Length: 157
Image (cartoon, rainbow, N blue to C red; front, top):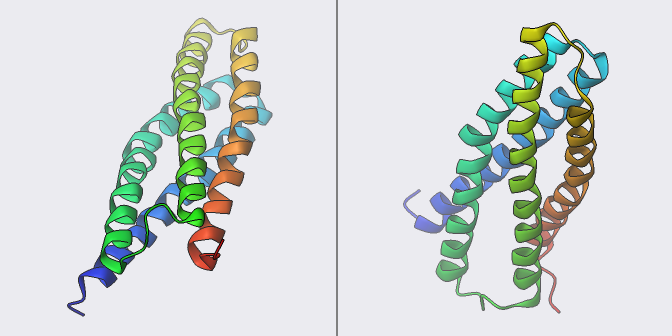
């Protein structure tokens, strides 16, 4: 198993799994906790979601393009093939959504912690941020699903 391409591919697949799995897992956990409405649980959940995003999503988000470009080079693909160009675009869309989502998560975390400390309900600002967080999750989710399809199918256009 000394083929460098196989090692890079393994790292790429592992980081894709972490990126997508963490995103889906934290999104489910955040939404499920929010729906239950327990303010202290929401405060704890938003803290954990911010941490998970930096530990897993951000690191995988850097590893993905690095290993992807390395594989393109090692295999000798034209880096501007149609399916690769679309992959880059979709990855940028997902990343842009993620960056906004992270900012929203910081805001929601701070609002939920303050509400918990003051014994209050979640403020309207939290609910507005949560709606935008939910909306932004969809283009990111479908972009990454499409990237997976493109990576496996490699359509000739």
